Image (cartoon, rainbow, N blue to C red; front, top):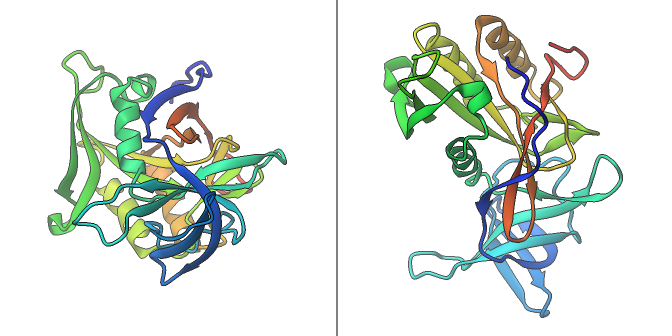
Length: 260
């Protein structure tokens, strides 16, 4: 994997201004009650259905997107949470699992990943692939005509917020779906390139490893995938109230204790 110089933070995804408040409770997986700075209590949609290990803090500050629409049951969506960071300073974390695919696509379109992926001519989302074509790859990339490697690139994106110090970990719970995705990424080799992109949705991490303690089987498959030739590009992002900045690629470890 080529090593590119550490980049300056680059804005890759502007956001509409978010509203801040305090998390009162999260319940029924999809719902969160938040007290806004005005004192109004609203119910927001929580797109993150997992346990949100380390980033779910009742009484903590959060940011919501307000987008009322006749087609939406809830006008607010929970986007970010303020949590203790690796260096002791608070850090804003992106918790909306619907955002990473859009964020990684914007990063590719901005050319940030060209040192690793090469020049890209086209991006197609949600393309059927895998056993009996029953899965969908997050992004299918077509290299540009002048790319060194002309093979198509299958990109699977995983939102990652669980940490141990500056080490980002995925998953934070057993994920049979994630296990299947690793197996299917291995299945496209060698006719295509297979790339796993852990979307590190917080700026305080510099390393990535599989979350063996939460899902040992995922850790085993992760190491098999590395050995088979699956590429892992953990993308680091910093979140603010008006946008998301790409901050480079984190170091990959085979496990929390073992380096590549």
